Image (cartoon, rainbow, N blue to C red):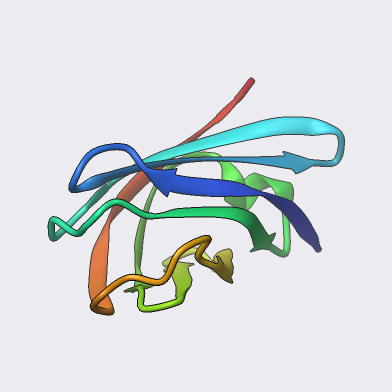
Length: 102
């Protein structure tokens, strides 16, 4: 299954995102292992096997930049998309993120 939404930097090592999953707005906020320049992806795709995978706090790893974001959560879901503006460098990241319903 997949859902569309957006995800963007919320400071140098944090991010926030929002996706509509089965008609319900799901918000995700996370901490990145490294500080990176500001970024935004207004057309992101969340791929998942079960709505239950988009709950609670989950670890992830991935890459942000130079022109794409790709995050893979340890329990399966992925967030991917093209950044609105290209970054100077691609950065490998990891961390944890919390999912909540709006």
